[in-house]
Length: 244
Image 1 (cartoon, one colour):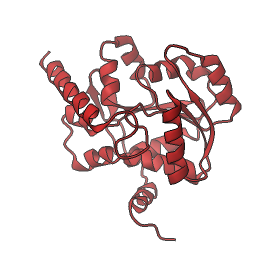
Image 2 (spheres, helix red, strand yellow):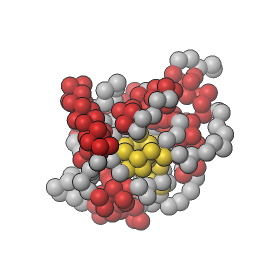
Image 3 (cartoon, one colour):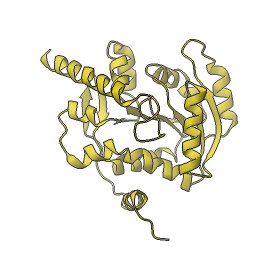
Image 4 (spheres, one colour):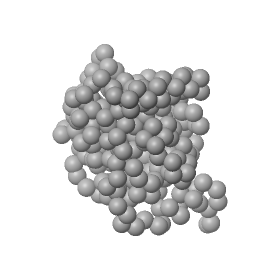
């Protein structure tokens, strides 16, 4: 069956992977972000899905970068993640990236759509980490609607004030999980995986952050007005950092 619309574009990208170079990085508020296309990022992520131990892919968000701006040691640790992608075109613009295709791919969440389609198509087992029941239900409903049959083998809340990492790790490992999708605020998301990476029996950790929760055009983490003000403050912080 011939596909139409966004899925046709994604499928075309999936079928055209080459050994492109991924050495280019940009630095935004002292976080090194991989400056690559959705196709390049997807190729690398598929390689991670075939290796052990767990590889860490992070989708950097404006809010997350700002939350961690004064946490120098954490930022240094994050720079050692396997792949860090810009989850918002504002981040690329802050690094003076003007490539129209790259900006459009980031704004359209092309990598995330490609990856979700890959998980669905290959019957991968995923585990969701969220901060509230409402967010968990919203993500689950979205996946059921758009990727029906995707194997969600577990869903759990992670609380900054009441951590139960040991129980969560045991539950994740017991589910024979291929990929952990984390939709947590920073620095909770980053601290969790840094602490538990060596204990997790999974192929991939994908840190979505709150702003990239895939439940619609604007996500579930923040409304349009809130995002506008966060981006405005972020741009001011970038201007200040460039003057230092």
